[in-house]
Length: 404
Image (cartoon, rainbow, N blue to C red; front, side, top):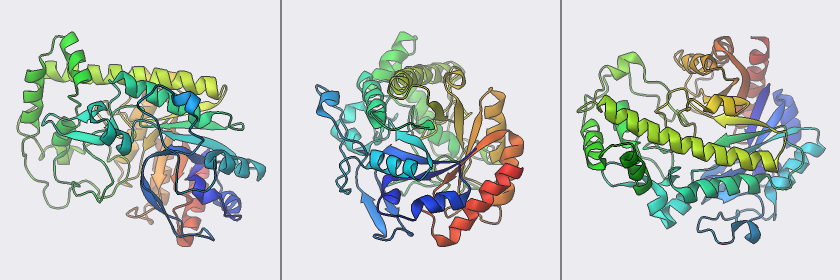
């Protein structure tokens, strides 16, 4: 199974898009129905070259009846003329014989985090991450469940539903002309990604952990550590998630102090508890709105991982049909993420990008390694963003994956 990703604006107004899907060798298009803010290139669209999606949006009608009485409510995309671009794009593809997966981004919304900062992730230094809505907050879980249902409301038959950011976002965020890349070693990023908001602290207390002691431990762990030695910083612009920390990097990037094991166990337990609650609410909404659709969860085998592909909890794999694992870096170690996820019993969907800074020469071998490591599905990023010169690469990778 091979999927290619796209936005509604890639499909609408481009009569050649469905042909490119077929030429890519993909089985389906994973089409965004809700998405965070982005500025996207449209290099092959006949009418435009850029789309400035300046806030997170629901690409379906924002129905007042669904959002009545809720503070957290999405906006539609003012940059698109269509009243229901998600449905129109899905129907356009279906009419051309192309299968559609609905792609739904949930707890990642900078507009809402800025409007309601008390619901956003708070780090141990009292700094908010407005792009990151905290799953421990009941309003956030309710918002994500309704968002998922509304993204799927009254859509034509779907092949699958792909759920992104069903869990906590962390310190790393690729956006807003980011200037934090590589500034902190991996273990400091882990400490800075622990949410310390009021809801999380309430859960800490319920498990016998003093919030002041926890915050102090996190601050100590986030103190400056040894700099990356030449040649081993994490891959810049690697996309959704760097992945596991290589042993040679971790060894020289210790932070000021390790988080005590008993504290770490509570912090992770609270995060996983909130993640399970969020996922349960979202999955219930998805199954009501799209009964029978297969469900793919963006996830990571490292339980401490945060971001669009948050760490898998012990219950996550059995709740869904497949796990999409971030495999953008082409280093050989990336295949270990697939192995680790497959070892949990998951059907693994390997998420691969052909966009810069991907090493085009390494991509065919990378895809083969991922298949050999246990991936049975491949998701390619991104059919709409790829210029003409990269379209054959998508086709080559789909072919390599099928014959591996």
